[in-house]
Every structure is written in C-alpha cells, then in structure tokens.
Length: 496
Image 1 (cartoon, helix red, strand yellow):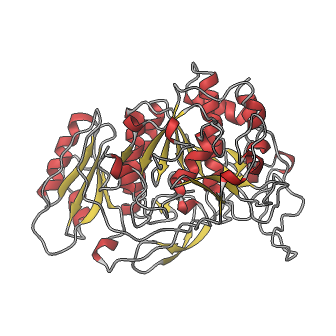
Image 2 (spheres, one colour):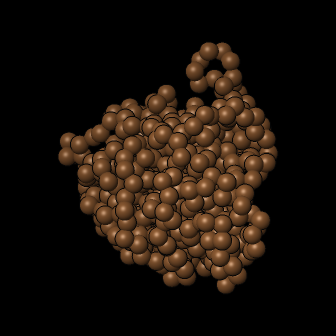
Image 3 (cartoon, one colour):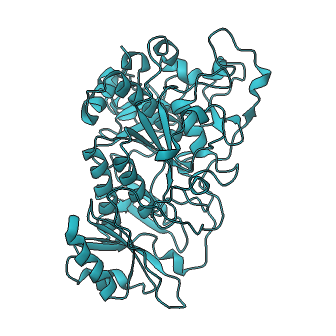
C-alpha cells in the first residue's frame, strides 16, 4: 500500500501544504470561496446530500451554519467544506438537503501538528549500468523474480499491452523524467488532489516534490516501466500511466483526496486505478461513529461512481498481518494527531478503500509463493494475491534480495516490499486483460482476473518468524482462499 501500504501501514513524511492554482475537470462544480474570518484553524468536513442539481441546496445549508464550500461533487452528492467550528458537523446535519456529515481529519487540524512515519524507506538502490543485459532483456530484469513468478516474461512474447489502456496511479505522484516511465506517462490525465481535494493539473502539483516521495514512482514502474533497454520492465510496458497524486507532503491521504482521485479517474476515462494506500486518519472507519460513517460513505460513493464508469479499482490489502474477516483491535487510530484510541472493531468497521464493494483486494506473497509475513488476509476479504516481496524469502537472483525492484525518482531503481508492491502487479495484469479484451467491462475483467489465477494451498504451518507458534491461520484448506483469495495472478493467461 502507499507508504501506508509498506510496512504494516507505516510511513509518512513531513512537509508543508501547497497553495495550488486550481483547474476543474469536466462535470465538476467549482465552488471555492474565501475562508471566513477567524483565528481558529478551519477543520475539514464532508457533507452528503442528493446528486445533481439538488446538491446546491446542500451547499446553502453548509453556508447557513457558517461553513465554507471548498468543492462540490454533484456526481455523487458530496460537498467538501471547512469550518472553524468543531461542532459544524452536528449543526449542518439538521439542515435541509443534508443526509450525513462528518469531519474527515478527526479535528486534528485544531491540535498541534503531528509528525508521522508511515512509509517504509527505500531498502537499497541499484545502478542499471553495472548490469549486462542479455538479448531481449532489460538490464535489471534478472533481478525481477516477481515478474517471472506471474509469467510476465512469457506473456510479453504475446502482448505487452495496448497504448489505448490507461492505468491511474493514485499515490505520491510519478517522476515524469524517469527514463523507464516518461515514454508511457500521459500528462493530460495527471492531476493532484492534495489541496483540499480540489483537482490541480499543473505538473509541479502532481509530480513528487523530493526523492523521499518515492512510493508512486516505484508502483508505476511495476505496472508499466517501458521495455526500452534502460532498467526494468513493467507487467504491461506498452500501456499508458496517469499520475494522480493523493498523498500530501505530510504523508496523509484524507477522504477528500481519495474522492477527488476516484472521480478524476472516472471522468478522464482511466481504465484501471492502483490504490496502494489506506485512507487516513483511521485504520478502520466505523459506521457506529457518525463522522467516520459520513466520510466512509463519501469515499464509497466515489468508488461506486468509478465502478459505474467502467474503472477497475485495484487496492492493496494492508501490511498489519490482520485477519480482515474477524474483529480487529486497533490501537493506532487516529494517526494524524491527538490521543489514539484502543478500539475493538467489528464488521461495522472497514479499511478504505480495500474493503469496499466492487474493488480488487490484493494480498502479498514472496518468492516462495507463501504469504508475506506482513500481509493482511481473510476469507472473502482477498480477491487475489501477487508478489509483494518478503525479505525472509530469498530468491535465486544476483542480489538475492527478496523485495521488489522497481523505479524510484531521479532516474534510479530500488527495492521495496509490501502489499503496496503486490497491488500494482495485479493492476498491470488487469491492464493486460483490458488490452486483450477491450470489449469486456470492468466486472468481466475482474472475473477473468480471479478465474485465471493459480490456486495456492494454505501452508501446513505458517510460522515465518520460526518461534514455533503460528503467526496466522489460513482458512480454506487446499483452496488457500483465506490467504490468497482466488490465487496468484497469471499474466500469461491474461494475454491469450
């Protein structure tokens, strides 16, 4: 998952918010207003109402209780608003044309700023020039055990994807100058959503701001690094990429950012999105809390809208070694400031967007095709599995590095591990499927991804740390569904 997706949902980076010049895509109502005079820091909210023109009454209700409309999404009946009043959500819920309302950041904006460390740092870099490529190979392809595991090398003899297919990388942004990525990057479909969830198409807004913001570039290389004799190859090296920045300079992905990203993908005709992250500040969003329920419903509406526009939404399952099918003890939320809670969460609580209906949820395996020690799992919680890397599963490669090698900002390559790395492998295979079968809709494509997956049996004794105690229990027996869903994705089947 996004940096979030890396080590058990760990990672973030400090920085400053950007003041962005805003551009609005087709179908969006731009309703930005001056902030009301106040010495209090404004907090962010979502307010849910009717779709279409009826949302204008919802906007009036926001203003009636002293809120400021930042962005309206009439496609899904959602208004993003700010207010210096922490009781704004309670007040606006009583207004006309308001169905739900909730704060999106746990009101942490009115507390001292928090530093977060959610993203795993780069585990090592490699110089492609030091490798001698074999005929038909990229210089670093011998290190890409992950591609061979899902038969990408065989698939490329038949197809490398179509330039008519675009994959949106909803992440930290893609380095537009990287030689493995620049040939496939569609600047016209790239955007930033990190200024309060309002689209900004300027390149300086959607590209990574410094080399530490490497997650999106790494993900993009796994999906579609060009086969050009430079470094690595992606699963689908001939498809197009769009950089959709959802992670801000502090490393957070708030609901309004995700909503903007999903609607952007739907409006721009993007075929697949990769979502290697979870939405902050709650690891799980619980319907029993009216604020969390409203924000989760707003994100769900955005995902449903993307699904209705034939976008395949691929998500990473997470890195906490949680069984998502059972109650989970969450002691780390909220993660953006203020006191954390010790919550025993049940089925009314969900990871966003990974547990939303209609998405592809991907767990991770290492080179031995066994669940990575960090990967979340659970019956009916995982669609398929894919290589995400595992430092403890050692491949027969020149470096013997069990993580995943891909592109990083500045024209380099480096290793990472996480379900963040598994998701883009699945997104790449979906891109191959959509290239091979352009007549299939999103649901047919998801069905084929699962049907073509290679089943993996549950391990007899899952004890990756070797302490003699099971570290996770795999339900499903020979089907392996508890760990792997339908099984390991298969790029070769996707192209024939």
